[in-house]
Amino acid sequence: MTAIAATAPGKIILFGEHAVVYGRPAIAVPVNQVKAKAVVLANPIGQPGQVDIDAPDIGFRTTMNELPEEHPLRLAIQGVQDVLGIPHLPAFRLRLTSTIPLASGLGSGAAISVAIARAVSAFLGKPLPDADVSAIAYRVDQVYHGTPSGIDNTVITYAQSIFFVRGRPFEYLKINHPFTVVIGDSGMRSPTGLVVGELRQRWQEDPQPYEAIFDQIGKIALNARRILETSQPVGLGVLMTQNHALLQRLDVSCPELDRLVQAALDAGAHGAKLCGGGRGGNMIALVDERNAQHVATALRAAGAPNTIITRIG
Image (tube, rainbow, N blue to C red; front, top):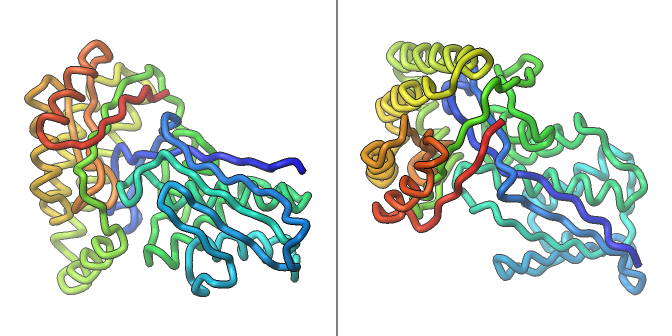
């Protein structure tokens, strides 16, 4: 029996998280050093519709029918069924592995959904186009995160750097000069849905000050796009640090992230900011390639249990 496998990369948001939910632009890029993988294998002795799921990284084994209706793994599989119009699945085994840290702002949930959608649809003999894969991952994120921006499913599905405004077609971003980023893990899981929901509640109670901050974040993203497409990327550093200060004003950072941002700056990074939902998860720092290991070492000394050095563009 031939196994069908599919992978999906992680992602980071360079600029615009949270503000993107409110219609401002954001920039996101894939991180190919980490990946989610789904492997599907037929189960000739299983009952029709029996889907055995094994996620050894987290010690999780179950069947699809044992999962709650709104569990993200079940939603991803059923999303493929719905798009393909298949009322009954054949028996198969689904094995999930990932090197993307969970709940860290690197898109682990969307990457798993994308990998599942691709592997399961290919196993069924009807590989889905990217648009359908992205839509399935977005619907899963809607249940899991409440009001997702659409960035995770888009940048992970297409594995391209993108300029994104919610409700508009995304644009591929041509990066003029590649650059190096160090990603630092705070060691805390990021409760994205909770952070997004709390910010929305505060915005609803008093929108004006939040709208002003969202506007500033949006302008930073526009300036960053211009630099990425036309200039040397060193100018992104100041914008990153400014963006982080605005995210602090939105109360989505935390002492652990702030400490890592400062450690990166002290170690010679051009700029640094939290990445993703905040209150945990990861931060990113723009560095010279020759200084990347030094910054990564400084981040670990400041409490980061893990670091990733990635080349963008």
